[in-house]
Image (tube, rainbow, N blue to C red; front, top):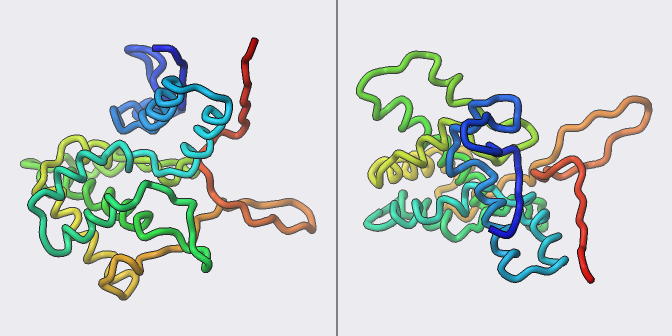
Length: 228
């Protein structure tokens, strides 16, 4: 295929994931490596050192599953109305960046909307549409992203995106609207802006820690340019 890429995804058929919890591979097509693969493949078609370095920036500032779920959002939007349409329109207008912020340090509405939409979709998939309850362990199996992957997806959320049909996704959008309208005390999705998320860091000694914006990226990066 002309390239190699890795973001703790399953390295070969039958293997567990590179991260400690092997259940992470249950994210399937919505594992964060799917977004990285898309970025790398595009650069492979028109390679340059600058384009290669830009992969790190884009992958480290984007909620990875939002671009991967665009077709699902478009499918859910067809025929939608009212509050569900407003939420789906807002998600489609957002490219997944949780880094861009306004003068007040607040990010675009898509950030809060996407996080709530994933949570509502998971709740519907695991607890509302099951013919038989699967027990209290469901929440544990659903999991949640680690602190180094704040905007990644849980197994339960990935299951929801893979399996829910249009009516259920619209219901998730409607519940998202209600939840965020109450949280922000405003029914206009354009106002649903939250502060740019930061890392929680600590320091020993007298010095205070500087503000460190959250980026979903490796601890150490290396960019190498090869030429004649």
